[in-house]
Image (cartoon, rainbow, N blue to C red):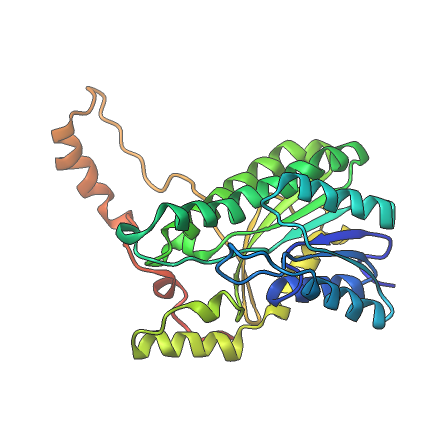
Length: 305
């Protein structure tokens, strides 16, 4: 008996990396899987190919599982609706959406083109909206549904050269939180994962110095896509029905539950504040609690386990 017996799962970006591992593991746990992948390059903007998603679906079927492929883009709302319809037509239902599909177009913000911004926002943030909006009414009606969306430490902590990606991923965090809050009465859950894993997207990170070279090499050797997939599958399993609205980090064999924004210190001035008293009193008092501008590596500075 698998953890997902009788369930139908849609996995976007399912032809490579985290998406592929999620699709394979979901199938091995008994789910019927719609493997979606546009089949395009890591930077997006190309026509794509149906071949990669079909290859993963065939691999699942050859192993005795149930799968069908789909090559629509998550940026196309009509295409996303077709994914949902395909799941219902082929497997008579849909119970979970795992959405790791993404692209990267890294550049310093002061050099970023409008196209670099728009493309990344469209795939990551609008794509997450599209797959959730197309399925949410079904999930609420059947009072059974789970989303695993993907954020990034680039958003929740920060990385230089990824303003577009970070903004999109912080948007996904807010989207997931509201879906979880609104969905709770209908048994609709939503959680997000910030993954550390070697993938086509990570392979595009520029290696400019010895420190970044070592960081990329650690990711290649110690942080695998299949490790992230295990957390994703656990989050859509019925056994985790009481887990929703959370932010997780998957890093090698480590799983972290992340904090979410809450007040860290407050100050009151009964006569009211002025800009001068804020600068002279509030900011200095709060300074020890303020976060620095360090990147992800300043928070996760140890070697992965």
